[in-house]
Image (tube, helix red, strand yellow):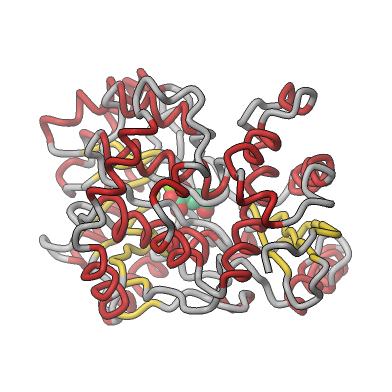
Length: 441
Ligand SMILES: C[C@H](O)[C@@H](O)CC(=O)C(=O)O
Ligand SMILES: [Mg+2]
């Protein structure tokens, strides 16, 4: 199976008009249309394809599509075996192409494009092996896993030997943890009750539905107006009671001092964390906020716009975050996320993945299952985000039971979308977008 040659790569711009109902809205992204650059890799075996995606919020997806096309010649013509037998080399080839790295490197649009392509390659590999991606990773020999990671720029924080030691140590009890996951699933929290554009009435209804479904952990969008935040957090805290968990997310809205003051005034609602309080690149700013909020028991979470392993390294070195939010589509796919979860394990910081977007829940569940079974071996202070939107467009949608992600069983990385959905939502000529334009006239 691995000898199959990649003969074609297609990429499409697929957008869902979520802004119409304010799903996904926050203090900076007030009208997101959840979208993907959707990649399909074809091989010499007509039965074997790889599906991948990266997440965007509408406009600009066409630029990511262009970047994927620009990188595609590095993939087409290779066999899967050639790629995975030197995955570190292939990762570096994509991320460090002598000309294209100038428009990154390893950040921005080119990094999103790299993620989409590599996600498709990992999907292809898992399908070729007949396993869901998390299982492919869990069963992999630690030395082979290490060979998928590019350690350039992070050895001052994590050496190859240290990473290997972490994986070998975590082998103890891994079978029991895998069985536990298959039985109980991985704990999740919901963001779907409290997007910023929702009315109080929506908030109340959605929160009461979520409580009835067994959710115990809730994230509330904040950051635009302090009085609104106090009212909304008060409302949610009252509904969920003193023992359930509340988090708040400002999506980079504030300056550093403003963040400290604003979050202090929300302290009475006892949020576990403040997410993205300021510019995602401001590592020392996050360190300052972390230090200031520690005495009132509020941690800092970030990562959904942290563009590579080097940034995460510095966040960890500077004690600038207390929760690492990996994202399956922001950095260089599984390869780079492996480096990030291993660094988090070394620094003993919990990983709580970001999944607020289309497809992100489907993908990141594989990574967090791997983290628990094969790296961290802990559920303390850990949970994976869940948003209740657009799962119906995926061939193998997430399966949530008792507010936990049940491990996927279909082979692959759960990236494949239904062809009918892709065609309907393709931008700008899919039926959904044509109808929207007609109504706008
Ligand atoms: C624009 C996205 O919906 C963003 O608000 C998601 C996010 O910050 C989260 O889920 O966390
Ligand atoms: Mg967020």
